[in-house]
Length: 76
Image (cartoon, rainbow, N blue to C red):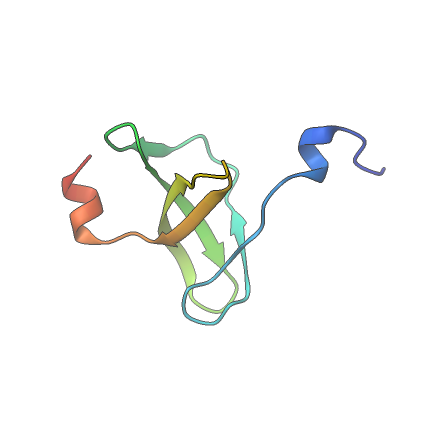
């Protein structure tokens, strides 16, 4: 069945920081909030397996994803 909701059509897709293949959200509710400006969430790459990504909103309210670093984990 086709996605008919506005939210479904505007879902952002993220690429693996290593191979640029599509990352898949594992569908879990588990994430870690940073200090009001970012959160860490687990994704899956078909080539590299599970990885944690740092997600934040830019000035245009789009979500930007980068690989999580040890500094990100310390800020949680």
